Image (tube, rainbow over all chains, first blue to last red; front, side, top):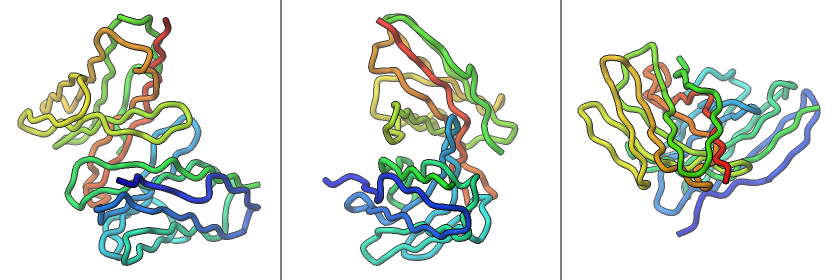
Length: 112
Length: 111
């Protein structure tokens, strides 16, 4: 059973740029959630995708957008990067309605 | 609204016990507990459901007081492997019942 994978591991961008982060779900999972984790904080829910549609969104601006593909992999896109976007971005896969989420190792984004 | 965890940090010696608390200002229907070791992804520990049902992988006990809108995680006879940051998460209606996590409790077990 393949776990959740994310790429890239680390990324450095400058303010105003755009970034795309990628996530491959665990085999058999149809739902992907994205979280932003600032240093010393808990993961903050960005949004969830199920069957390629957004299925719930947290308190994040529209410049945070996502996609889910037919193979259940997913992308998180962030436009017009701001310094406060620097964080660890985690994706988690699950079965819709399932209670356990399986997190990937995360992508560390630094915005300069 | 983010659940509140206490304490923020705790240091134990192997074999000692600890309690981590999670409280919410809103009615709780379930509480989810995860542990994140340094530099690693969060890992599911257990879920406590309204009515008393619990589901989890590890031999960790927890309580869920629906009236007080609180949950507590009990770590007994702690081992070095228990070290990490513990997060509780509660479903938020505003986000389509997706989890909102607390700020975490750092647990360090020393030999």
